Length: 118
Image (cartoon, rainbow, N blue to C red):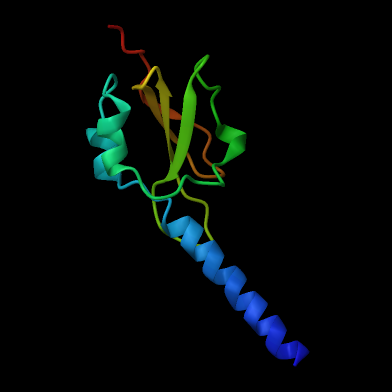
């Protein structure tokens, strides 16, 4: 009985891990198509169901002041480190986006770092 419970807990843990990783993937083509200044309402149409809970913190750049930044995985691979996308919003608009490299890679690629100005 205890062995069965252990198997059920282990299977449930794996299922939750896989679900949270695969439902936090932003398609790279969708990320590339996003433009600084776009309203959040337009951006959210391509965002995945969940945000990533595991961006590689050792290579994380500082967030823009007053921004609400969100992180998404760039791949649905499991059990490996993957690149992440960071999208930062302020006043309902996308103000910056960056690729956060997977663990072991040191250079952050900020594809568009300027803020949108009205």
